[in-house]
Length: 416
Image 1 (cartoon, one colour):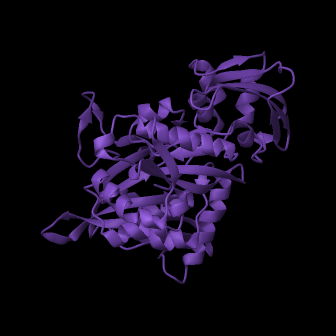
Image 2 (cartoon, one colour):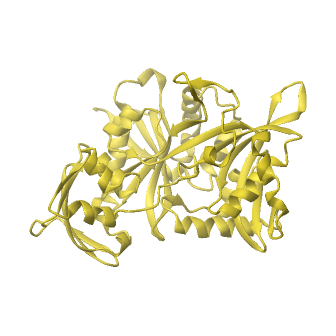
Image 3 (cartoon, rainbow, N blue to C red):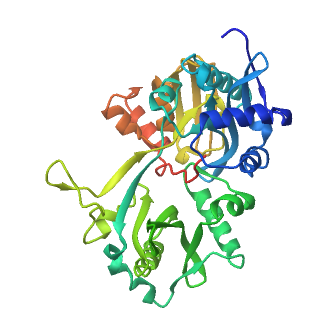
């Protein structure tokens, strides 16, 4: 698009940038000081991470490119998280967002960034730009009394819960860090992010212990149900991490024991945490039916998306690919960054990739969004084959890819 310039933000952009933010997000109730602190003193980004689009001297679009550290197979990998995408209202539908994304993708590929992630407002737009699906949740909204059977869990000798304070904050920080390293696509967090965002009032944290060992936690906000009765609340869980049955029982037991003041709980869980199978009565608090005779239990939310950027850097990020040995040719269709072909050799402890050499007897091919879904573990090779989402050539290619790309379900707890 003629006349557009791209650059990173500077301190003297604030007045224009603040105006653009208020135009794009008029219903977000923040003060100018809060907005300034968010963009200039954010524990996860700085002005240098904000990409600006200028038409002449006027800022017409912008986005934050968060420099994240992501964990896969216990390895730290760099990823760009895209957030706060803004286009001036009078310039919408002119292709500015697409131009900005294109600029970012080309920049990050040249910088050997393996991948990018974001939360979409327009799913079809980001699918077109190459992002594939990666995250989903089931959100339950139930009465606290439906958890009554768990109230006895905390009577066990070793299980207990504690509200997060300065005294036990390190327990929370260290537990998350250890679990994130074992997870798939979870992000590294620093102490400032925890204190300034995750545990900022009115949020509360609750730690679950088995003896002296932390086994899980939840973070919640109490919200009013009836403005005329401040003693009746709803618990809105912002983050839930219960990787074991003991952690689940302790945290649900804590919630159950609040039933005298907390009427209901809104609980977002990963798809592999089926709350409806743990309860005698799993119905949503609204008690509504769908499809005539099916009780509404949870709402399914399709969340963050993942995109391969520099394909070579992604394969050579340090992932072990579950110890597979062998070679694979990958052909990726990418309208934004150009089609690519790589020959990848898996050594059992990692992978090396190049665009030269002969073709492997195994060929994996498809569009970038689908290959991204496979690479991050959202979709298995067998699913991709069964549903015709990717093409596999070679007698054992599906089985080889099934093993190489197998990961736990991707779970990014961070909203950005």
